[in-house]
Image (tube, rainbow, N blue to C red; front, side, top):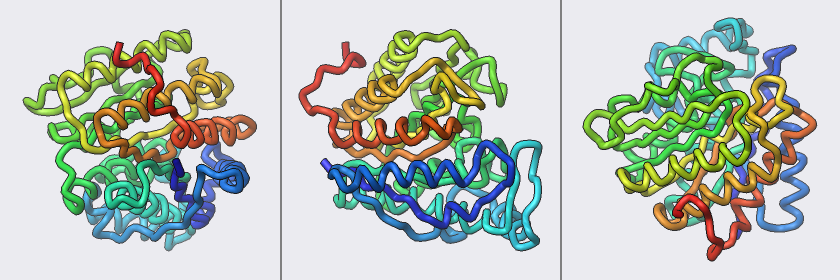
Length: 322
């Protein structure tokens, strides 16, 4: 199976200076994926920029205008962690546009699975607030696009970044049509997603399942937690599309996060999620890059994720169902 990889070079235009979320993240991963494309299973594509009407699916118009204005004025610091350069607005438009094109490709039958190599990341961005390196919430925009423009009724978002996807949760907090699952280190930045932060998960008001994990969580415990989360979703929700907030900062050597995971663990995580999508969502998966800041390891981690998306065996026994 071929995985479509959307890797818009405009994402390099976002340059926050001396910062973990640096352009080199994109460069090293794109180089690895270019090499993989020559071996098969991976097809690299550019993508369009999102429009303001695309962003307005989840963001306030005044906020979108602010991000455009700050970039036009040469950039600046939006908060202690989030910095813009003159090219940041275009990069963020390209990141959101890649997510939209990936959803269209998967839903319109061009491919079953797609990965978006994009930056800046998105899962901390709120409707009218930048946060945690994030400007626009790519996965949230993609989910609403699938629903309002492509007729998908129910979307599952699984976020395996080491940080809680607070922005995504907030955007769908009162929406039973989007089930949000976040596995993350806790207590940890941004301080949300603790053990009592779950919604009722039954569609009464919202569908949220937070899985907070301590810093000493072992890989085996992580996989068991993911299995249980998928079983919980399976009992209460019937998704038609799986979106992934794919953060690689739970890698053991990550300078920003870390949760004791290694490359084989990301293969195992991906196998579980692809298997779930194959059995419950018609195989439709769109994965969107969030965090991951260990430059020496990130290309291998991303490549393991993408190649496993392509090669996961359809008859493989996967633990989440047991």
